[in-house]
Image (spheres, each protein chain N blue to C red):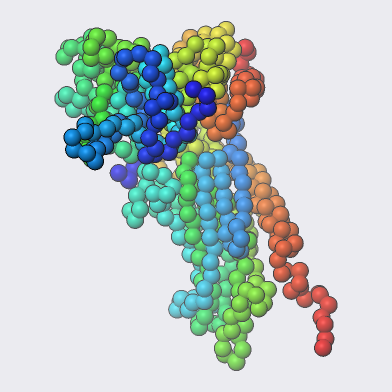
Length: 295
Length: 276
């Protein structure tokens, strides 16, 4: 049974009727996100995202690999997401549902194809070796809006991750351990995030960050991906009933405001984490500005 | 009984904790099971013990001569006979409605004629997605056994205890199984005792505050579903329903004490702009 249990008629009708009165089940405004917390684990690139009851863990990892033959100057960046039974009883391990393909597709477009991570900077030696950056998304609880939550997790992870330093010496690639040389942050060109809207009542009511029940009761969804500068890097409306073009225009400005707000939350979380690490870690000691003792 | 008794699955219930007031048979509720232990001496009859199948606090009712486990706020519902549940019709067959009690679990069966006064001609025509308030009749034995539901008391042919049958309108909110059990206990005792019995004053408080706007109707399913309807609410019906749902889920998540519950009700009603 790899399928979400359908809503009852009463729930479907109620959600719609309530939205006609501008009331959402959790008392939120139509343009309001659920409480968002972003926290980091011990290692670099380990992010926990909690968006209302939806929660997930993103893990960024790196390894040295051979670049693709057609792009010898580029590194490799992959996003792996699997909906396992850990996240919801409706999902079965090892079987790909529609939701999974959809979410992976959107994440690929928003984060990967928009070149948020500069893959050229991942090249170590042309055509021989490059960094392979991999983002694994594990969903631990599901209550709607998987796309936005995963997007937040991946972007926070990429900004938090530090890869080992590598140099080329006499045609040989040397990778230094994390304790030998200060690990290097990834080169992030811009910070795109997705904002998902759901439409109800023949496109008259549009809400963002829908819960699972709201998603199920909705008619269609609109995903807008943009960065802090307001560049739209992704726009989609795949299925469901028609949506007025003005919705896209109006909601883009709402989305921009939300993206700025969320990027602010991510930045703040990154700074707190950095401050914590500076206190306990070796970052301070291994700074180049430190006095050297010469024996 | 002095202090609450906490049991883990497999623990035996000491007999001094069980109600022993009258000769009526003891009724075992959710989380308790009668186990037969063969005695080592073949001439002696086997002994019986009552053991817990779920972790939680033992709760007993001397008046009804019943004992059950007040379970922790978990999410998994295990059907137990006589539980009242809110089921959703999935599809129907000539003899049965196939209902969803827990999502992603095998369907439960509800007889087409298991309604008050139902005959072949007058039986309710329920379609997919309709809700019914039903009682668990039996849960079968062994693996793959089917859970059977009913909306009548087979002895009297009436919809007892009150209100069993199709639920129309309203909204369903999900709460934890433990919360549903507590709400059930709170609503079955008198208003003054609610606080003592289950530590819940929310329903009484909401009842008082929403009286002016037409009151509300509530059905609690032990499967962690609460159906709320404010049919007489007029303009504020939707808001009142949402407010009740928010109160219940917040109390469930944060495990609030009675004072905080009262505060929460006032705060949420103010936020939703409902006059009380």
